[in-house]
Length: 149
Image 1 (cartoon, rainbow, N blue to C red):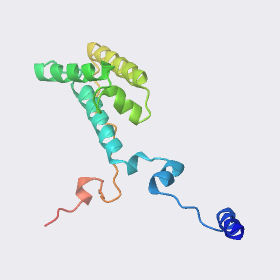
Image 2 (tube, rainbow, N blue to C red):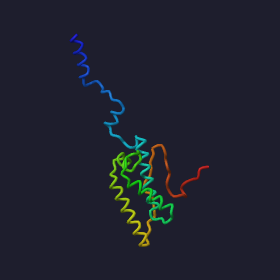
Image 3 (cartoon, rainbow, N blue to C red):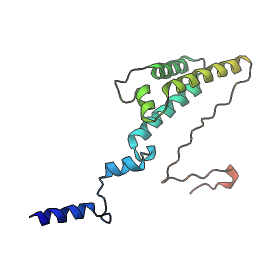
Image 4 (cartoon, helix red, strand yellow):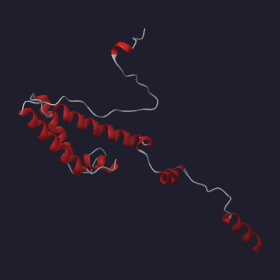
């Protein structure tokens, strides 16, 4: 009987046998990339849309734009963590510092309002570009792009 126990111990201690890992253990060791996690991609899209809305409407004077900016500022200034898409939870999931983003948004708003007062409004261009491996886009001057039939 002791011989069987010794044989089973030898098999587990052999360095040539492969380790058995479940997918969760593998991805924990490799590192979790945001591109592989749909929840984090959605959180990133929510954050990007909030910042884009803030930048688009921060200098506008109509009621709708003011309401949108107030909603984004209220969302970003909130410290609650009750629901998954709160600003704090989105930043935590994406490994971003929420206070740094808040400060950056405030500084950007102040600089844009100063530029408007000086008569030098900034042309708004949204800096994010979504890249997906399954889609291709062709960019260039319009005269070189052919219209599809």
